[in-house]
Length: 235
Image 1: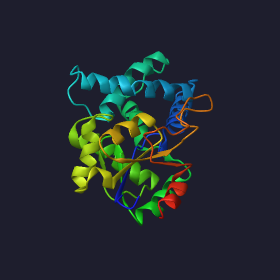
Image 2: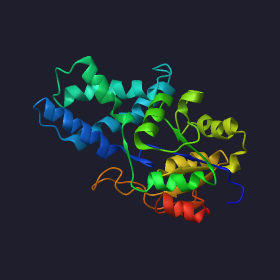
Image 3: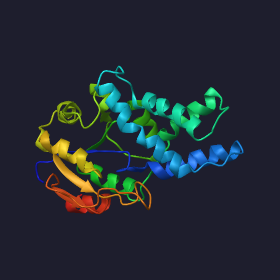
């Protein structure tokens, strides 16, 4: 892909292991409170509110709302569902910010560091800028800059998010490659003229989950992890 100058990355699930990280924090909180909570099931329920929350913004039911705000709306509901009551506002806010402290997949930092030597690298995430900045600091993600939904007040897979990556970096869409573990993301990026790379994350949803495992026609490059991607791209 000689024309590609920048790689932009889906983050939740592609770069970081959100499910294990959130489950760990929920279990730690439950232990401090003397409760028994299935942390993995809690994480799944929290993540299940992600798409519907964004759709409430798209439909106009909610005004533009940063992902932290959407996460908090879902959290307030599922705390009750899981019988977690009596948290202080500080405790609830700290739990909501678990998404700022997610751990990267084992290959992520090393692979990104290799790719950074040859390409501009940046997240193109639905996470808000403060979330993505904290996440980069926490996990050592070596981004050149932070792009994403908040800059254009649209959530992926809205076309405006993908176009913004090229516009902000002053590049043509074909000079930008979207990297993701989710085919819907790559299809939308492809429709906007971006190049695409698929990196499967078999354990994103746990051992019984159903992640995307095989590339389709929207994929230009398929890699087993970020180091493999770096090798294929000559980085």
